[in-house]
Length: 419
Image (cartoon, rainbow, N blue to C red; front, side):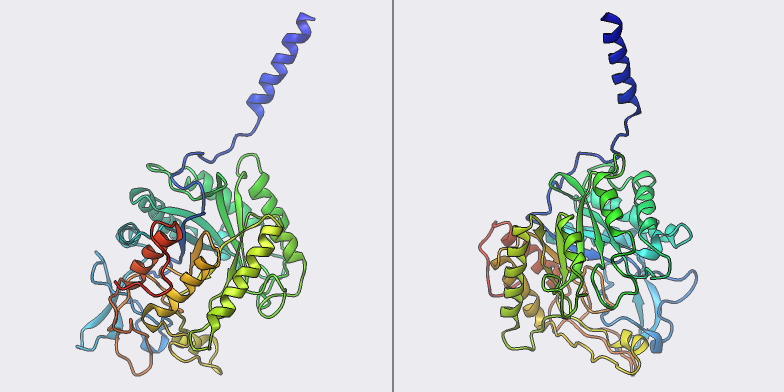
């Protein structure tokens, strides 16, 4: 009897030693997405070594110009300002650039960002070194300024020929082991939801993608993130089209998408370009979509986060992507912040408990909320939208005000606040 007792204890001890342990810190300043406004962060503007950024105005692919007055380092471009001086741009690879961006987040009350990690970055032979540097700087700045941060995998670039989500699994292991993203030094600010590190998978259900969501291993990826004993234990957010619920319009008509969503913790519909201030009562349509989405999510035990953007423009980019269908500059106008605030107030008034902002630094498609210039470079070829005469920090300030109203720290205003 005694021998059996000690043998049992020994087996338990061996089992305990051999059991895998989670590599994620349980400590974080942000245990839930609820009550937060998070923005997407691209971080893809990189100065070539010893070269000039955007040397040819005919090849410019950005539609907004950043206000670079506060950057420690800037780089010359091939464009000129109205006074004849050389237009300058920042580089995302500079630590001082990322630090400044997170300083702004702290200053204006932007809760944090999702770091975009595109599919080609997950490949072992992909551009990991550069992107890892930006991630390291971002996580250090997030800790320094106590801003929430999390990883968002964008499946854009995944091909249909033999590729699947396996490299995403390996990349998450790399980020956890090498970059310590869920166990950062200093103040730990990796965003959790329901007490679990949040990982986002974006780009599921869109008809213009080369991949079929049924055969790229999405279910295996979600299961890994949620259940792996070492790297799992995560909450998962799925980025889907606007009309994911009805499986029509901008969404593939495949009910398998609903199966995937039900396995996740949060659903994020992408609504950029789907609503416009130029259409009569379009915010009523936006409201109705949100209300119906929230109802579906409550019935299926999934949390919901609406997407908000300040406007949209991709004239310069479309000259390369769609030469036979060049888009007008400022196709979805910002109206001096009015359109941005209409979406924010509509979403909060409809019952949203968290918001996703597209995007923090996306000047390619004119959706950036960080400081942009009201006096962009002049060009006979490239066209840039401006700030409608508003201060460069307007959208950062509005985002901070929205956060206070989302958390009920001040009454919700349906009318845009005055800075």
